[in-house]
Length: 269
Length: 335
Picture 1 (tube, rainbow over the protein chains, first blue to last red):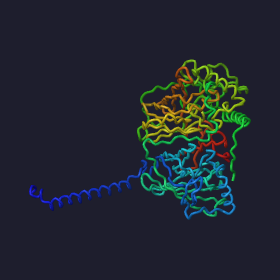
Picture 2 (cartoon, each protein chain N blue to C red):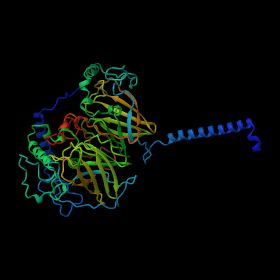
Picture 3 (cartoon, rainbow over the protein chains, first blue to last red):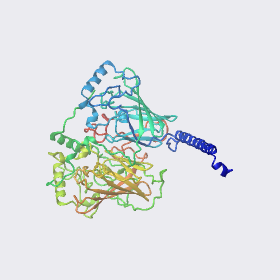
């Protein structure tokens, strides 16, 4: 049989197409199993909670301006990341925002190397690293190398806490979503380099959830009765840095102004 | 909104800052005796001065096996709160001897040198950094200029919010050690060090950093760290010792199996500044929830928590243009 069929073209076609169908079926099964594996194998801590450890960064233009904007000298265009388009400023606050925008080249706290704050640090175009344990999550921001702690140990906001640059962050899990309530802010940070801002009455609720093992959906509800007429939402996507040997490089940039004075050098130099 | 105008700091401001810094150090140095060390060495006694300076001798710890608990990824579990047991950064080689040339008289007579903690330089036996003559001259100039800083170089960079750097971070307030798969991270009062345990190569040599670039691995009870990419800008203390950007630092963190103490032992090499390599030793002890919070060594407070378990909060450490005190970013104090 085999010998005779070997030279029969139709049979060859039949055999070949059978093989191809088989391969396709195997390939389909394989890719299906890869997909389901990806869905099942989100990184998790020993306690089963999603593990966001890694180095993350947005590709969005959020830090240039949270609101929809055309290109301009100091910013690429962006469709905006605010739900509904614009931030619902109170009239007086809108005037302040416009003032900030006019003086953004000098007044943006970023220029001084000050801590970016929350939520801005999460969508600033420099990486941050998450170090996660069951009881707390540390975010180390490359910009300024400031460190934020999100407590996930069931503790509540301090009753007598001072104002912080990064706020007082208490997280809890709703399924696989990390929900962080952030209070006790100072008023020294901006929300972006377009002068969008807040007061020390800022209250942020963040929702962190994996889209897949290398992508996080980051949502924040921003509330500040001194500045906005109602709470509003923003959303950006964070991507995991996967370049070979990628690491944070400390960026204590507020030292650049004076660091040339150190260390001492021989007089001849 | 309170927007802060940026102004380059003038010399007058530098002088005021230096004075404020000096005051802060005294305020941070409590008059009441500090809590005793968890495992005091037989020779350890509270020296004159008390406060931060709570030991004048400390035990050696041998490198060897680790018999204590381990993290899930197999590291000796040394995570928690730690602080040095001897003194702050007033004086590198005479840690309990006060700031060199301090015009303010010591609050208590210092007494003979041998009644104070030894130099942090453990080799050579002289306890002195083996500076080349030009570098020693610069240190002496700093020790005079520090008290009336007429030039920016006489201001300790930590007073301008620069990270404490190496080795000063180990004796500038307490700090937290946290461990993660592939990492051990030091959250200092002023600055953070991420030590990579995965064997990846150092950054390119032209990248220079306040805290350097750290690669480590465990040998029994000892964390061995190679520091490259150091910018040499963080002085070792108010006594002005330094390393340059050509320097290399090899660190050994030797943890006692009691998990209550460790000694930091490091070799500093820099042919452009020193005549030979030298060794630095800094003892540290663990602080736990059983200790009372301490405004210098153990800057924590009890969490607001409905359960009975004692949980600790640690405030963010953010310093910008000296707002809110040194290393503490809060814009106003606790109510």
